[in-house]
Every structure is written in structure tokens, then in C-alpha cells.
Amino acid sequence: MYTWSLDDLYEDYNTAFEKDFNTLTNTINTLTEESVNLKTQDDLISFMKLNEDYTRLARNLFSFISLNLATNTNDSISNQKYAMIANLVSTTAKPFALFNNFVYKNKDSITQWIQDDAYLKEHEFLLNEIIARGKHQLSDEIEDVIAKMQINASDAWSKLQSQLTANATIEFNGDTHTLTSIRNFAYDPSQEIRREAYLKELELYKTIEDAVAFSLNSIKGEVNTINDLRGYENSLEKTLQDSRLSKESLDALFVAMNESMPIFRKYLKHKGSLLGHDNGLPWYDLFAPIGQVSNTKYSIEDSKKMIVESFNGFSEDLGALALRAYDEKWIDFLPREGKRGGAFCSNLPQIKQSRVMTNFDGSMSGIVTIAHELGHAYHGHMIEDLSLLNTSYTMPVAETASTFCENIVFNEAMKTASPLEQQMLIENSISDLCQIIVDISSRYYFEEEVFNRRKNEFLSSDDLKKIMIDAQLKTYGDGLDPDTLHPYMWVCKGHYYSGGLSYYNFPYAFGGLFALGLYAQFQERGEDFVPQYRKLLEATTTQSCENVALMAGIDITQPDFWRSSLKVAEERINDFIALTSK
Image 1 (tube, one colour):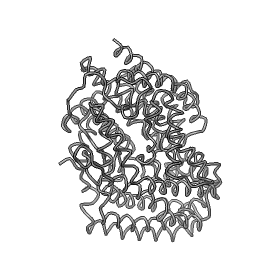
Image 2 (image 1 turned 180 degrees about the vertical axis):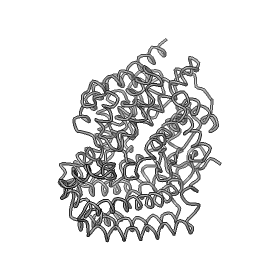
Image 3 (image 1 turned 120 degrees about the horizontal axis):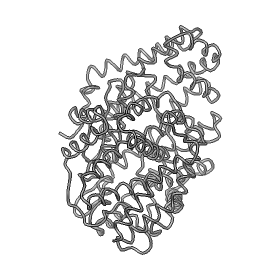
């Protein structure tokens, strides 16, 4: 009842799936044939339209397989199908390399063709990106080899991390727990249970730490090698280019975040003192409820009512999108063995839908998580009418709509909450902000150190644990008890385990603070802001982060905007300390 339906993709690995797989094979063969004969404007357009057909088929097939694996990593048929389509899709590396090289070498002609043809004009941003990346493009033969290699390298290592963390179990309080369920005890009202669960969690990691360490080393080593071959200064440069974000903007973000660390440490130490600690907050109490604990557990129906009503307060189309997600079974709600931990949203613009996976635990935090993922779905809704080749937005702006929706639910809940509930909501929001500022900074510094050291050495699980602890000390400082940090945060965070997506940490800080700034505009302007917000989300697929921000009058290249958003966090922290010091 509370699982998603994938029937709008395929009902099973049936005739329709096999038909599309065969069609995809034929489409790739045609792409390959056309790629060696690219000469004219008509050739360019023909190849791009064929690419649209390829993209539609590949997304349908890959999405169906990947979504099945997300909820059951042990699904042998899906694992088999994944290997088949990965091998097939890897054969497109050479034709796409030929296409990219054609665009780069003929950039002057293509600039003119764009002005003469409406279809090319529609894809101007995409073509200009290909031209900008041309100097990093390798030969078609080498790109072909890399794509084939990655199937049995970073892709396989990534699947290993996912499978190990999904299936590892441990006994606790008489029950068998997965990593996801044992981590959920971090929110338990009992400090003793939180502490014992934390210790059990650390014990569980020991059973998989070496295998996961091999995964991380292999993936980061591969990424370093490929980026070096392509002539990037480092892997961060590649990520920033993929993110359509300047180093200037990233530096401005971190200047403001580093300035804010003392106020977050003040919050952490205050929370520690409320829970009876003298040496900072222990890790196991990081998400501990404060004050009189509510035993309220929210049902999935409760979450639906709360989210839809809150979203309707922003706009009818946002509320309707959330209602559709619940009613049309877009969401897989509950944890179970074999299911991935965490939560995500997969946009499916080719069928004008999305799918959301959560591990809902009945808490208010769980409701906020659903709202967050539905924000991604709304973002997908804003771009679903664009050309399929124009439906990819980058990591930083990916977290904007999701965090914006968190703020909607928070502010609506605050209007009707009792004083005790308001205290809980404020503390939950501060805790979330602490995660996207302080913890995300630690993850960024961890990944940066791993990339740098992986150039010359293999990092053992002990090395990785030390790097993680050092990163936490750098950001959390004296806010946390140094004797109870979390050395294994690199094991459970799937964001590190991608050969094609590095540094998936700072986008959460970017998106969170950018969303706070946008929400402040909504509070000032009301419904007049909504059309501008929709246009801004739509532009994220064809504009740089800087230009998207300028649509709202925001300059993200300077620390001042980021400071203004962090001022909201400071005000909430001071309010929380005042409320709980009485």
C-alpha cells in the first residue's frame, strides 16, 4: 500500500521493456552511423533529434531498473538488467565524443547556425556548453574505453557500497536492525537508547568498513585519473564546470559559512548542556529531542494532509503536485531490509512524473523529508515541457526547490503550533541548518582531503576514519564532545560513491541558503513572487547558477547574500536559546 508504482514506466520486465530495449539498441546503432558523417547543419540537427529519442528510451529503461534496485538491492533480475543496459549505453561514448568534437571544431559555423534555425536556437545553451568543454574532450577512442571501463570500475564499486550498507544487519534490543533502522534511533526520546544505538551503529560499520574503503579508493582514484587525462586542475574544477557554478561563488559561500561556525557551536554547546553534558554535545545526542517529548507519531495520511495544505498556501499547483504524488503512488515510504537508506527524488520528465523514496519513521522530521523530496518533484514539474535535451539541472540548484518546500512546511506549522511544538519545530529547523552548514562543510573537507591524498596513496579504513574525524573537528569544533564523534560518516553517505558526480555536499549548503533568500522574498511579496519563482526553476536547466540567482536580484558571487541567509539561522538559534534558558 505504501510502496510506489512503476507501472507508468513498465509493469515488469515484460514485452514492452524488451521492445524498448531493442529499439534503444537500434537507435544507438543509428547514432553511431550518423556520428561518423557529421558535416552540415542538417547533420547536426538530425543527430540531436535522434539523441532525444535515445534519451527518452534510455531514461525509461534505466529509471525502471534503478528504482527497482533502490527498494531491493538484492533483486537479481534488476541487477542483471542493469548490467545489460550499462554495457549497451557505454557504446554511445564514441558517437557522442565524435559529436562533441564536431561541435567544438565547428564552433564558428554553429554560432551562425544557431541564429538561423529555431531548433538549434532552442538548444543554444547546450551547444555552448559543449563548446566550452571542448578543450577537456578526449579522442573518441579514449572516451569509448573510459565508458566501458567504468561499468566494471566505479559503477560496480558504487553498487557494492549500496548493497553492503543496505544489507548489513545487527542485533539491538532483541531485534535485527539494518543500518537505516539503527540510525533512526538517533531521534529516540531515551538518551540511553540513543547512546547504545550509536555504539551498535559503529560496531556494524566494522563488518563492512574495509570493503567500502576499497570502493571509495577505487572511485576517487578513477575520477582523479580521468580528470587528469582531460586536463582539469583537479576534480573540484570539473565539478564546478558541471555545476555551472564559478569558484568565486563557491568561495563566497564558504566565507560566509565559516564565519557562521561560532553561532552553530554555541547552539550545539547549549543543546549539550540541556541534555546534561559539560564537554560539548555527544554525536549520539545530535538529533535528540529537547524538552518535554511528544509521543506523537504521524501517519502517512497525516503527512499527506499537512504537506498538501501547506503547499496550497504557496500555490495551488504545488499543492496539486503533492496530492498527485500521494494519490498516484509516486512515493515509496517505509524502510525494509534490502531497501536503500536515506531519501531521494527521481525526476522522470520523459513521462512528466517523478518518484520519491523515503524511509518514513512517523516523525515530524520524516514529514519534512517528504516535503523536501516533493520539492524536487515540483522542480521536475517546472521543466517537464522543455526539450528532453534541456531537462538537466545542476547539483547546487537541485537543492533549491526542495529546501524551499521545507521552509513552507516549517512556517505553516509554526502558525498553529503550541509553544511546546514551536520549540520543537525551531530546534528541528536549526538542527537541519546545522547539518547543511556545519556537517556539509565537514563532508566537503573530507572529500577534498581524500581526492588530494588519493593521488599518491591508498587510504585504509583507518586513514579514512581519521580524515573524517579531523574534518568534524575543523567544523563542529568545541560544539561536539571530541570523544564521541562519528568516524564512519564516509561509509553511510552514498554521495561519495559516484564516478560521475563528485563533491555532492556543498550543493546542500548552496540550495539551503539560496532557498532561505528566495523564501524571504516570498514572505515580502506574497503571491506576486510565485510566477517569478516558477520561471527561475525552469531556467535552471539552461542558465548558470549566477544568472539564475540574478533573476531574483541576487548576487551569489559575494558573501553578503549568503550572510543574509545565515542571519536567519542566527536568529533562530538565539530564539531557541532564549526559549530554553527560562
